[in-house]
Length: 101
Image (cartoon, rainbow, N blue to C red):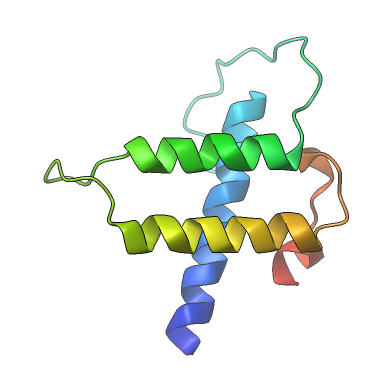
C-alpha cells in the first residue's frame, strides 16, 4: 500500500507539472524559462487530463517501447480521481490539499 501511495503522489505531481507546461508556465524545476504565455484562457482540468493521457499514450521508454497498458490505466484512474475530487475549475487554482485528497 505504501508503494501505491508513493506512485499516486508521483503521478499527481507529474500531472501538475504537465499542466504547467501546457499552460505555458515554467515547471518548478525551471528547465525552460524562455516560453511565452499565450493569450488563450486557461484550459479546464478535464481537457488537460485528456491531453496528458494522449501524451502518455504516445510516450516511449528509453528502450523505445511504449508505456504498458497497466501504466496508462493507472494514469487514467489517478487523473480521473483528481478531476472528480478537485474543487478548482482551472489548473492554476489547484492547491496542495487538492492533491492530497
